[in-house]
Length: 429
Length: 153
Image: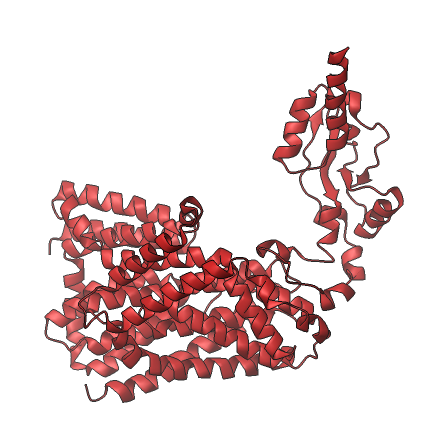
């Protein structure tokens, strides 16, 4: 490693991270500027090239995200998400605890297959409405929906952007996630749900004031486009089936997602402008630009140096190393976006693998840490930020102080459960 | 023709230190939808509309929903009324920035501004910025329509 490129590339990367964390500059703008600077200085100093930058972009990740975003963008206006929430409200018969569990389960299942952010964006407004109608505070429900979607999303390959990244980098299939991640996540999730029920027991024990109004909500009227909703759900179901066998058929997850998006587009023929408007382009751009930046770090030899340092620590058994990784990544993800952390750690773990370490457990540690860590603070994940923003339009806004009393314990408990199960599961590997 | 030709002169306004309770009283008594909020110099510093008042009864979360057709009964929301503490706050906490026009503004420009800012009523101010009157979509619209008949003659 030569010193100058290493210093320059690290300064660009960490400078960008600081700008993103301090919210001085929009994260997509920062990432584009950082990527452009990395390539420009890389060319001048000779450690990076345009070709290398393009190669650094993981198109499998971007394709999978784009495909799923298109499907959700089409499903969104059909009213399907409101339909589910209204069904939950009716079957709860206005009982706050039952409503709490039902909405939590729906949010979790949705966030296992769809992006957490989308799930929360769509479920939170109708949650507020239902709580207002019943006459209970929406606050416990909103906080829990964000926390449970953060937790549940870790279970599957497509549930969480860090998982998409890890799956693509490590070559894990959809089924690998079901075998290695889902059982641990389910237990951690149950722990989170029980803890939340306990933490909010005062709010949830309040008697609902208007049960009759809840029973008058008509689920059928929530579906604006029942036919379109059915078609997209069929395609989405087909995509999930293909995810189960994608590895055996040698099809990449991004091919499955983009293929499903293409079928849905042809079958439904929506107004494409409207669909494209709902795609979160800034997220895709952020990912792409981060890949370019981290590629620069790699080519400048920074990752090699970090791997070299970590190898000193490899006297520790990989499983204990993994538990340490869960907590370090979780702590970082609580204060920082988990996507840049994951993208930056991927080459490090790959490097450790090349030096002879068994890295399979480390990938899972990274997934648990990145996924569960986001629950710790009000800014830990985008889902948290969204429910907080929405709660400002209600009678009981969520505050950072409240989050540290409700979210932080959930992060600690889920990480602790995951650590114990992780030790048991990977001890023999 | 400019906007002064169709504005109402006897405009009801409130001082910035007025409480929300007093403002509500004026809305009811005068049966109006918008109150300009003025400072000590009678200059409009904001407006408070019926919609702003009603967010205290039905918070703005409804705007996040694609539609509310499926809600037949607002249940507990129906019995919630703003607390005494809320009603004793000044209108400053609830008002929105004022969209105003100067007295020499043309009718079409005034109408365009109303559409652009999604307003129904708009204060008219003098060159010195003092509140002179108030005009509405109906005032401006009927003034414009009336010119069509003049052209016929």
